[in-house]
Length: 243
Image 1 (cartoon, one colour):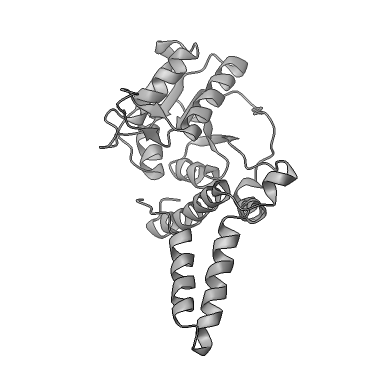
Image 2 (cartoon, one colour):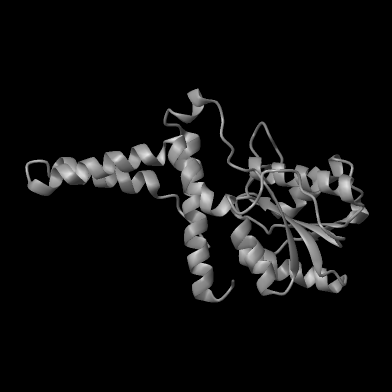
C-alpha cells in the first residue's frame, strides 16, 4: 500500500484554516484543534501511548522460541538509493536493525536458513533483499544459508512470495523478524497463508530519559506516522481479506 505521511500536513492545514476564519465563531476552534494536533503528533509521550496497542502485545526481551524453528524470515523496509558520495544502496535504520536481529537469532538458535524479503524500488535499483543479503553476509552468515525473495512491494506480497519459497523447502514454522509496530499485520498475513509464525519483534518504542520524552521532536512525528500507517494498513488488509 502506497502511503503518504499526512499527520503534520493535515493538522497544519486545520490550524491555517482556523486562523483564516478567526473572526468567525468556528475559526478559533479549528485553530486550536490544528495546533493541538501538531503538538500531539510531535510529543513523545503521545507517540509512546499510541504505540501501545500494537507493541504491547509483545514482551520487550530477547527472542526465545518455545520449540524448534525451521527458518528465519526477515522483512525489509527502506533502502536508501546510491548517492554521489555513496555509490551503493544503503539499508535504512529499521532494515539494518532487523537484519542484525535475524543474525543474532541465527547465531543463538541456528544454524537456520534466513529468508530475506524485499522487492525492487525504482529509485534504488536492486531489490531490498540484495542489500539485506549483503548485510547478513558481512555479519558472518554463510551465503548458502540465505534465501532471497525479491519481488514483493508490500507486506502482503512479502508474505505471499515468501510463503512460496518456504513451501518449496518444506518449511512451515519460522521466526518472523520485523519491528514491533509492524508485527501484528505482518504475522497476520503469514498466518492467513497457514505459516506457523513465532514473532521475533525488534525496534521497540522504549521509554527514554525524561529530557527527551517531554519535549516535542521529529522522532515522535515519525513514530506516530508509523503507528497510523499500521492502523490504516490493518483496516485495509481486513477489507481486502489478506488477514
